[in-house]
Amino acid sequence: MARRARTELFVGKHSGGMFSIENMGISTGNRVFVDSVSGTDSAGRGNNPSNPVATLDYAVGLTTANQGDIIYVMENHAETITTAAPVAIDVDGVTIKCLGEGSDRPTFTLGTNAAATITVSAANVSIDNMLVSNTVDNCTSMMTVSGDDFSFTNGETRDTGAVEAALVWTITGDRWHINNYTHIGEGSGDQAVACFQPTGTDRGILENFNVDSAGSTAVFSSLSTANTLMRIHDGYFIQREAAVGVAMSLLSADTGFVGPNIHIRLVDDNTDPFAAIDSASNVNFLGPITVAAGDDEAGLDISHGLAVAADQNLVQTPWGAAREVTESFQPAASLVPIFTPSVGKCLIVGLWLQIDTTMGAAADFIVQSSTTAAGAMNICAITQVDGEADETILGLTGNAADVLSLGTARCASPIVVDGADSGVTIGVLGSEANVATGHGIWHCLYIPLERGALITAAA
Image (cartoon, rainbow, N blue to C red; front, top):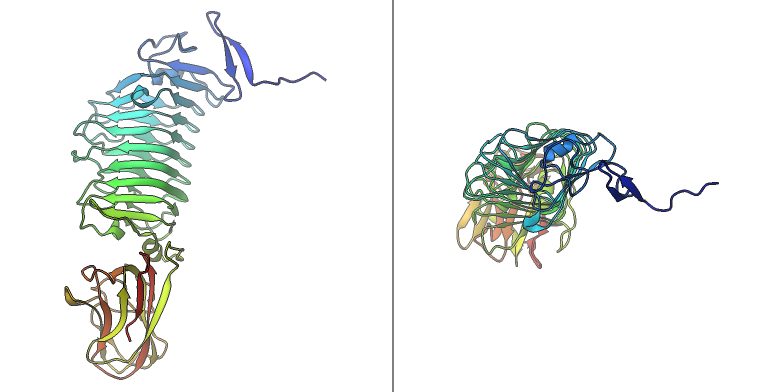
């Protein structure tokens, strides 16, 4: 029996008589070389580093679909794109490897024309180590991807000068994968809408990212059609747009996983950290997902509040799982203390009254918080409880303008309380009614956000 080859290294002969040793363990396809310094876009070129073509678009035209062809874009290559879609990656199965480190990497600059973009319409395209720089304000989209199974690794996009791209990534293809990615936005511009805007995609992955942007909607924004089974984890979002304060905006029908290890910075000290992700009911949130609002602020893990708002099961926190405390309640015309927070921040994810003895007719209930700094304030609207029977559940939504909701146990808008800083929300939770008949049990489901933080029954 004849022996088979024992190496993946094979000698190839090119036009002009040049021989090369190629590693077929990487790919059995052809190799094409691109260099703007020494290259020329003409027939017979591109087959070796000494005979390159000048542009990526021309190199793509030299490849054959689905045979594993690799395009090598050489160190210090530079292209300026001034017309719509002059770089059209439209051949399936092509791999583009950009060579060099730092400023020596191949750089594709979008300039003059706001419609300038790099388009990927082919399937199974992989791009590695590419740097794309935008120099035109309100660039429609730096990268436009409609092909399935697209991969972008070790790459970077930038806004250069006082300009901003409206969108960096417009993605409609399925199973996209962006890994080890950096975007450096320009905070002084005024045109950015979002860095990422996937639409109707399936199984997209964004991981190991560092994104600094100023999106007028969000840094990551789903658009119009839900994205299914996406995975977004291990990265940093910086939202420079103070008027927005949202890093991720998700549709209610989006599905998949957000987290773990996502860290968000908002520029405005007064921004609600729980608003940093406009949460979707079908997305699973995996902690930690931390938010720091403004300078010199510690990050707050908001993953548990997002999970509750999405009606999901709670997960373990660094300081322990969700805890429940209860307090017997006899209605009275004056405020009756029910719960007291202490030591540090807690997240109340459920606050409800379980009636065990019928309340008097037309009883007006209110739940208040009291602090030494701000006095008493209502955390729900006055609610008429008209002879509700045993085992009736009345719960807070978390919105101070809402009445107690029949059958509700979880807060749609979780409440942060702080036993150490009375200026945050509350010092003591209490309830009162204009009747003294009936009886119930108040339940508080909360998650400690800091070591030692606790909520106890007030009595």
